[in-house]
Length: 347
Image (cartoon, rainbow, N blue to C red; front, side, top):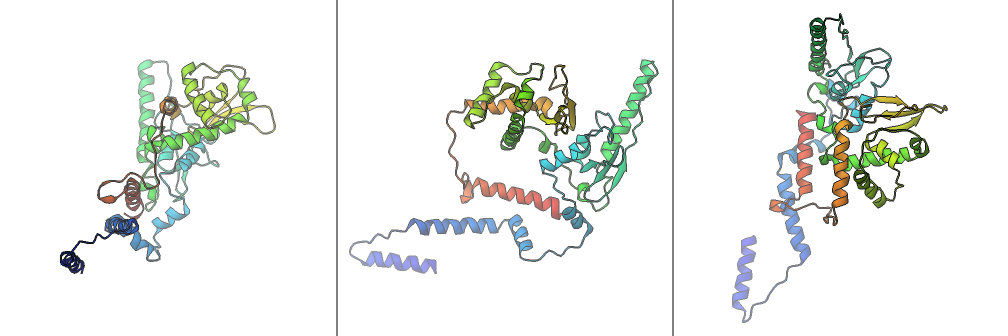
């Protein structure tokens, strides 16, 4: 059909004394390009898979799918990961001190601390429950004997971590997919998320500005590093307070315990809670060694530095950068995300 139209058009041009130029509207061109891109997207196997699901009602009665829905299985959700980590905050519920068997390692595997039982972890998806029995290393005063005892305890802890995924019930989705460490760590790749978290903590801590100013902290930042953050805060019309900047940048929020005058520094990222006293606080050392803020605050500083050094922002569009064959970067990224979801939830 298209070839016949082209032939007739050529004949009409050749037969006429002077050729007539036909102008094609931009809207017709856009429609043609859109059809081409839509056709390429629809031919993608991942899109076809999800489209087939949307056309039928899911009636899966498998235990695994039930776990995913009722247990809120979202391994890539950082907020839920931090909620699981925070469940280990109470020393009454969790008093295990180990470099490998940490709230982070267990939370990445989908476990939370059971507030009703000491040193017991539980899964919100499959309702499995495990009592962690970690013996204390015997200290005899003999360096060699003590070292052997410590190593034995460490090996037991490492076995718990290695078995964390297997402790879930057979059909629990956590047996297939753990939360990647990249969801927890502070990185340039998650710049938007890190800035939003900083905003939230900073706005909260501003309410305690007077209290924070009365606290004493070990020096951490240089004057230049403060300026990077101050520049960012001014751009977003937020009050600048150096003490609040320090507390927030290091991942802490200030809370008042009940109606008393007792102040607490809390860190959701590593389940830490510090009572504020007259002594100077080392905001880095007070974190657990595995906390993302021990090194991550330096990454945050680099993010603020890069923003301060950026004179002109690159223009962006809602459609994303166009890649080959008319497919935009946003469409490409969406396809990659859908493919990841398909593998996690349906394979």
